Figure 1 (spheres, rainbow, N blue to C red):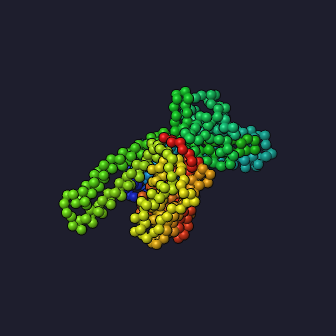
Figure 2: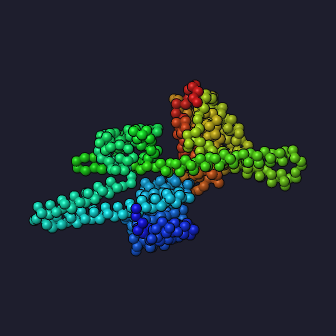
Figure 3: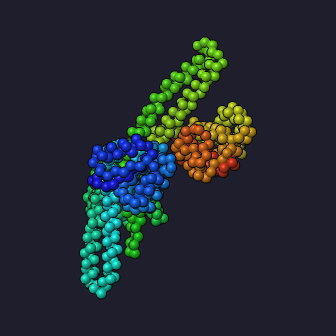
Length: 515
């Protein structure tokens, strides 16, 4: 693996750049340039060529994606790695798709994994430069072909040799690529593979040629169809598994697919990457979060119970100042307990460990119960909360407790973000067997950009934060609705209120109990 390439590191934290420099020095990387300011790094790149750029995502003057976009304008063949925090995972994935970063690595990183990715990145830069050199040689060869057209036979013979050598080198580059490369046709039949792909499948090339690629690489919930290829766009598949039938092993993979068209044939190139290590890292991280949040519940509950004893004067009289302090402490503990419970619920849904208990119940009655529960909060802010429906009663088949959570969350948010003296309405309607619930407020509203990201984890909008909350409530609501095979969405404009809606398909008048 390459160690001779030039590496540029940008991070606004001096400790991070020093740590990376020391680590790379110990591993034998001799050429490392450090910057704590992205603008200074861009000035350096204008006159100096590097092989690898490692950039932090969150920086005060510009974020990592903007920096890497500007860097690639002067460094055509450079390979890039983005350092992100857990909450920036979505932006990192967007950067892979939009600007083509080689890898995103979450902080804190694993040193061994980081070094492996740096070596692979430098190898990729070298291969890209070799490929670019070959392309330049081919262009030069074509120009010579025109110049020596009178000696066409000799020139063609000479160029044929050169092209053969170039193709051999290109073939060698593809074969040595660490990721599996598979070429398949319009019928999804495999026509060519590289060595890495054969290793992933664990079978001989003659056994795989002519096989349907998407009978060997499958998703848990959906099946890939030729319809997906009709648009002719590049696309990226996640949460797929490669099946080794001989060893009965499923390997988690990510797949990039791009169409290739020429005058004779249309075919597709799939780059298959083994993400076993990343999946295991995600599992360990999620298990740690689940264990930590679970263990936090016991001391929080004990603290709340102890404060209840003090506040109900079971342990003796307290003065008004003490009462105010203990009430504030109890409220803070209850808020923390709510956050811990929300984190646990999010983990359970993402890990597939939550099972819906569907029963038949009256959604209008449940909405009134939620409205009564929130009336005290609404009265404090002089807000009128109402439930409206054309039906007197409307029975649906769903998990009552989970739907209650969604209603309370949406209506509570609407109250918190409405102006004094305004209103919050819960409208319940049906269309055939589909249920639609709208929670409407007359609050501050949201921009379109905010609406697009509002249901993501830890998201509170991008421009104007609607609250100081964690951003888990709407994300959990989305998980609950989608677990019911439903859809949740928002319609809003700044200063014109918001309408949060969810639809449950085929949920009305179904009396079956599903566990």
